[in-house]
Length: 241
Image (cartoon, rainbow, N blue to C red; front, side):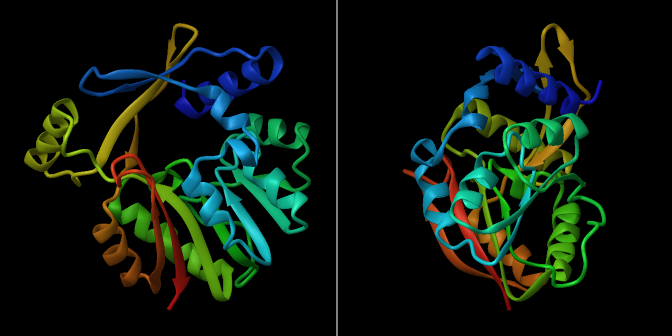
């Protein structure tokens, strides 16, 4: 089963029962429980760097990987025009059920079904800057977002710097380098109710790497907003050059 379908199952169970035991497993055996309640938070509960970045949302907004719709719902209440997209139909159904007015099935790692210049802001929160898994795919996504955003368009996103302080994570990064993968390319799968999803890649990015990659696709780093450390997480505002 695809991990994205397991993710949809977990979101729906939490929506209906308030409980869901979802686990994330890395390909070296490391695992941790995902706090599914996080996908149902309101603005006051958003992490500080998300709240700071959302102040830069303007115009027509595209919420990529909208999940249960927490950001789209907040921006709707602010009076913005928001389109939420997710690659999983079952997740899109949940976003609609929770009140997202315009939620559609679309994959940001492919060609998006939108006109050139249709949006002013694209948001990619919850580490979704790295959702396409590799540097090449990330660059392709940046080009597609350049196409569908108007002049002066913005990307608001979050990611985190690969950990160089935790010995368990440092070993993983070293193996990435030895195998020729990007240092922050993490191979993961989801585990839910005894079912294991297919493996997928998530790309974590240091601020310097993100700045350099974005610049190659016409995006300039306008603002960086870290939490207590870049390893814990940070938000960025990218603007069309």
